[in-house]
Length: 142
Ligand code: 5GP
Image (cartoon, rainbow, N blue to C red; front, side, top):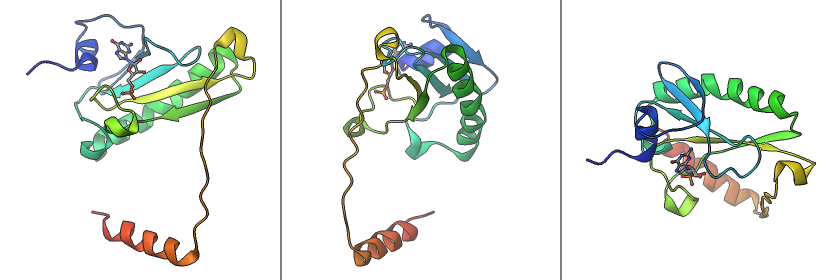
C-alpha cells in the first residue's frame, strides 16, 4: 500500500523542515503555513485520525504539544496560539495521518501573514436539549 505523505516525511523519504523528533513523535513546519511558524505535530505510529488513535499515541502527542507550542510562541513572541486538529474530509482533513496544527496568532498581521479568521457562530439551545445531548454522548463513551 502506498505510504501517506506524512509517513514518507517520518521515514525521511521526502524532506521536511524538522522542528522536533523523539521515539514516538515528529514535528515539522507546514509547507503551506497559515501564519508564520505554523507547525505540525504527528505520531510516528499511524492513525488515520482521532477516531482510531490509541491512548498511548494520544499521550505521546499530548506530552509534546506544550513543548512545541511554547517554542513557537517564544520564537516570535506571537500573541496567541491555536491548536487545530481535523478529522475526516468534511471536517477539513486532507492528509489521513493524525496530525495537530500549532498555529501562532499575531496582532501584527502584516509581517506574520496572519489572515486567519475563525468563525464560531454560537447557537442557543434549551436545557432539555442540553440534557438529551449530554446523555446521548455519555451513553456512547466506551
Ligand atoms: P489537514 O487539512 O489534513 O488538517 O492538514 C494537512 C496539512 O498538511 C496542510 O496544512 C498542508 O499544508 C500540510 N501538508 C500537506 N502536504 C505536506 C507536505 O508534503 N509537507 C508539509 N510540510 N506539509 C504538508
